[in-house]
Amino acid sequence: MRNFLTAKTKIVDYPFRWLRAIYYVYLFGRTFPFKGQIEKTVHQWEMQQMKGDVPKAREEWDTQFRNRQWVYMEHLDEFSRYAVIAGYIAYLKPWRAVLDVGCGEGVLFERYRPYGYTRYVGIDISQVAIAKLMPQQNTQTAFLQIDAEAYQPEEVFDAIVFNEVHYYFHDPLNTIARYCQALNVGGVLILSTYTASRRALAILRYLKAHYVVVDETMITQGAKSWFCTILKPSSAPASTI
Image 1 (tube, helix red, strand yellow):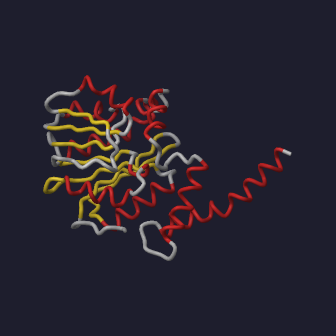
Image 2 (image 1 turned 90 degrees about the vertical axis):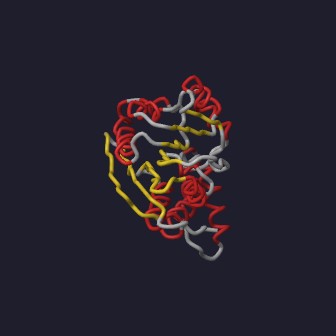
Image 3 (image 1 turned 180 degrees about the vertical axis):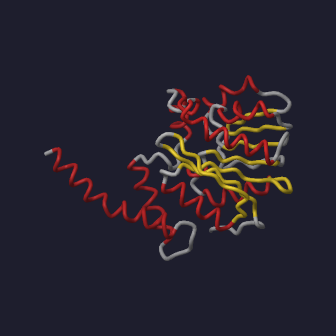
C-alpha cells in the first residue's frame, strides 16, 4: 500500500516537475502568456515540496538558526567558497565599504575581516542570527535585522555581496536591480550561486545576460560546487515587471 501511494504521488507530481523545469530553463525573467499564473503554480508547488531554495518566513529562519542548522557553513568543506568571495572583495575593492546581504551568523564577515575595511554592513532577516553578531558592532561595522527585499540602503557601497541568498527572494531580479542604486561609481555585485539549484542557476543566467560580467570562477569542493560571479550594472537594468 505504501509503495502504491508513493507511486501515485510521483505520478501526480510529474507534471509540476516538468512545469518547474520548463519555467526555470526557458521562461524565467521573460514575459509570456499566463506568466502570473504559471509563476504562482510553480511557487506553490515548490513550497509544498519544501524545496530548499525558495523564500521562507522569518520565523522559519529563526528556528533554523536557533537549531544550529547552518553551523556547517563554518566547516572546512565550505571554506573555499568564502575564501574566493573574500579574496575577490579584497582584490577589487580593498579597504572599502561592503554590504553583506543575508549575512547569517557572519561567516563571510569573519573570513573578510582580516583584510580590513572602511565600512561593513551585514543584514539578515533572522533576529537569532543578527543577535549573535551584535557584539561585533562598532563605528565601522553594523548588523541589521531586516528583510533584504524591504531594505533600502541609506549609504553607498563598493561591493554588495549576495552569498547564497538571492534565490530566497520572492522577486530576485528587481530586488538586485534596486540594490544597484546603492553602489558607488565602479562598485560591483558579488554573487555565490549553488550549482545544484535550478532556481539559482536561472537567476544567475538572467543576471549574466543583463549585467556586465567582470569575472567568474567555479569552485568545487567535495561533491558541491558554486559559481562565484562578479557583476557590474551595464546601465540601470530594466524592470522585469
